[in-house]
Image (cartoon, rainbow, N blue to C red):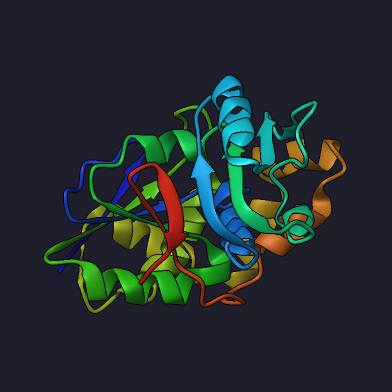
Length: 222
């Protein structure tokens, strides 16, 4: 099985894992505990329209900050306080990446790394692509290290050089914690008073939940 690492865009026609550690992947994983379906959309206008049509809870952020008029932002801690049949969510990076995926798309982060890796192995025929969401098309260290954590459960497969680099970089837990807590994304969240979200997103394997994106909706893997 080939395992590759990509940034911003997905190319796999087999299985891909979208990684947006701070915070879309983590928030979606938590939300799947309390919602039947999640609808990720790219724009604020789409989100508002979908929420009205589906009588849904509305969540989203831009540049980390909750969107005015929405029920909640993109916080894994806050989203756990909501429940319902449908959640509509729009984020700066993660939901945009999912829209471009052509394969079976799983959603992974530190909180479900082991489960999402095992599920990908079970589903894939010959290629697992780990896709870092990044920030507005640019490299984000938290997604690189989160990808490495997921890849650490795939090391008996054929890792490409980028995947191998992410795996190696993710092995020192202290350095990983420090790098993510001092990253641009974490500093931005800190300025917004969301440091607790960063701490939560660094928890490892606290969920067995594996969200899968298909036909415009996110559900639990069956």
